[in-house]
Image 1 (tube, rainbow, N blue to C red):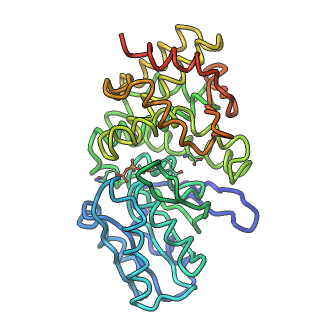
Image 2 (cartoon, protein in one colour; image 1 turned 60 degrees about the horizontal axis):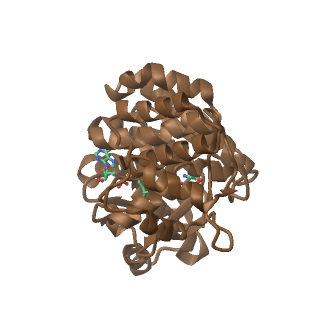
Length: 360
Ligand code: NAD
Ligand code: GLY
């Protein structure tokens, strides 16, 4: 097992990465302070892994909440179901919430933990590659609103993250590829050497070579932990983690939550951001080709859906947390491995990308 630290002063926490971690009770129990524990998961993950977690929690009073599976259920309504369970079982402020699942369960569970009695402890047990490399680390929690993705939420850090690589065995190929989109992101925004490693090793990751997967998870978490330690609440460098996400969120919202996987939408959005970076004169044609090619090798989509025209994109991109006074701000790339901070985007240049990239 490898342990990384997210350094946030007295709220610092470990990320445990390794195989067989779900069966190691001491990892959980060392950060559970009282008897009451609630495990939040969904209908798909429960039959696969809930019992393993419950077996590791033998000495605690455990309730479970099993939510329906899907991005479309990442809403306040379903977070309320978590509160219903906590209140009906008289959970107190020193209870612990465990989020066992992908990014949807992690975001919802974390948000419920942030809100319940103004905050209870929580543990992230991410079960998708995307959640292991991104969403479980850094404390962004929340739910979607019909008018915008992740628009309701809180920064709230977990006590620890337990990333058990074995659970990826049951993840389907499409979900694995979606996670790789966020892995590639770290290379693009701040780690050219890692990007080049990915170009060489992407086939190993796609065939689930355990050594390669463990390396990719560790490098991703290392990059994320460093960014979060530097800028927990996204007043600066943390925004670079949003490369491709403004386009991506527009694609997710505009296509109906659940049509595109988050990582798929991010892959398309990152290609659009790369195209715009080329139009700014920063990336070369060859750089953009390299980026698109790496996503394609993962069988990820790289062009926007036909039914989202530029007007609709602009409308959707106007609802983004990086925007200031209605001005669309994006993360672009100065080069592979170096991202910009959020920058105001000239509308005409943006329209060129929206109307041209992937449209011909
Ligand atoms: P997800 O949580 O919907 O999981 C994907 C699918 O895989 C689901 O059907 C799930 O039930 C299933 N699944 C999960 N683990 C499995 C396993 N081990 N075996 C078999 N099936 C499994 O999607 P995701 O890609 O993990 O997360 C996407 C969400 O994360 C989005 O809502 C996105 O906004 C959010 N996100 C949050 C952050 C953050 O910083 N908080 C960062 C990135 C993404
Ligand atoms: N996934 C973006 C962030 O955590 O900031």
